[in-house]
View 1 (tube, rainbow, N blue to C red):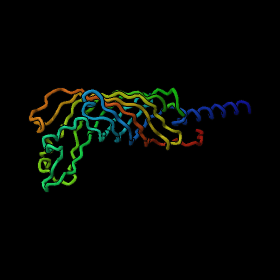
View 2: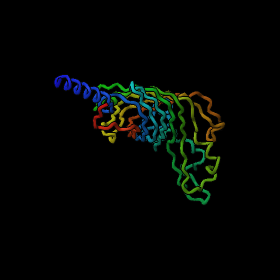
View 3: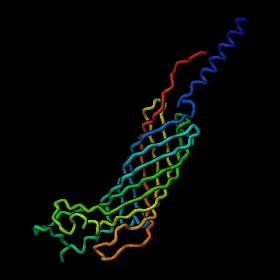
Length: 250
């Protein structure tokens, strides 16, 4: 009789342990909110306009029990390296100086500005990490790429760059974008240390959205192929209910 009771109790304990699913011992579904920082480099047509810069942004991710992921991300990229730096040449004097309305040299700076909006589908492969929700993360996506040359007239001294006139020089460009990424996703057992680090690539099939470039006196109608590569670190805040550590018997 006692042996039979012990066997039943051991079976109940085993069932209760198996019933207590948590992120540490099985895959679970949850939402995560994220913030990101990164470094980016431009290539192809984008590389003829911009160089090295930074990347920041955020997003939301849903992970299923089978480790498939659905993501929505927004990235803002920026930089100071502008290779297409002759846009203001018609406004310069013979000495190469930009003169403001007060007759003094104007403080005008140019830089790279743009954003990436994407939806992604991915898969986490648990080959490494503290639990089966962590591992190698592969994803593919589609979205929108937009960029322009930021013109900063800090003293507002150049009438040719005031208001909408600035749009004639900024090369505003946008279009459809594809993306691919590979990296490592880490979701800790204690819910506090959750991150992604990886490389991401974007290909934009873009076109100028300005009717006229003032410096050339012409419209740019050509189809562009803008490529960007980045190294990204993303911090996640997962939203799921922590499982209790105590065992319950029914």
